[in-house]
Image (cartoon, rainbow, N blue to C red; front, top):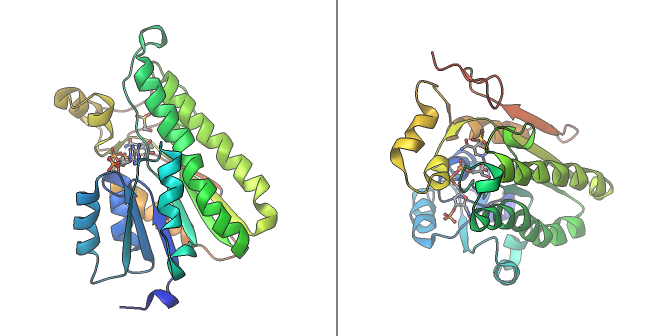
Length: 254
Ligand code: NDP
Ligand code: 8X3
């Protein structure tokens, strides 16, 4: 195993499940990893399973809690402070209702996690990247941040915000030598729909029925490709769909 001193450091939020977990596994042979999520037990299991490939540090926090986010970053010591790559992946949809029937708690959850949480984590990491005059931020957007679909309203709004934040970051961080990329997946079969539909298995399964959807590893491969591109290249914005999906609403179910 390479020493942490010679490996770049990648921090992944939402590493306990789905795209984040697959990305941790994909990147383990190349990077030292800081894996983040709310569920410490999942992070511990993942961290142990990768320990033959790389050095791993885990940070447990809810991205919505700005004081805890700041406190956890203060705990980073020595080389772990020099984060080279930030993958802003933590996020979810909560509910899927017509706008006049939406639940305010669901709205708060999506805006607080997908938008404000991404900002709180980025704020801490940017202190490091700007000081070091280097870095690469990968924001996980969504096709929902490019096209609004029926009942997508606030989830789409949160991902449109990620799109604007990615563009704003790219502009403002340009002179600080920091790359900013956004990856926008279409339907990926993860725990996403179980969270969105509050553990309703039937509703959740129906989303991916007869679609042959993307899987987490497909997005992990794209993330790896984006961060492995040559120093002079920045893949700024990439949308990734399964073959059966043409847009948010045009999906070939056979
Ligand atoms: P999962 O539900 O499988 O994973 C979501 C991850 O986000 C978990 O690791 C979870 O960790 C973390 N997370 C959620 N809320 C918080 C929070 N408040 N604080 C810290 N971590 C949090 O879904 P996906 O892997 O599919 O989702 C990952 C990203 O991809 C999201 O941003 C999602 O919007 C985006 N995306 C997903 C698509 C899909 O179809 N699946 C398509 C397009 C984009 P924990 O519970 O441990 O905190
Ligand atoms: C997840 C994709 O189409 O369910 O961001 O909103 S979708």
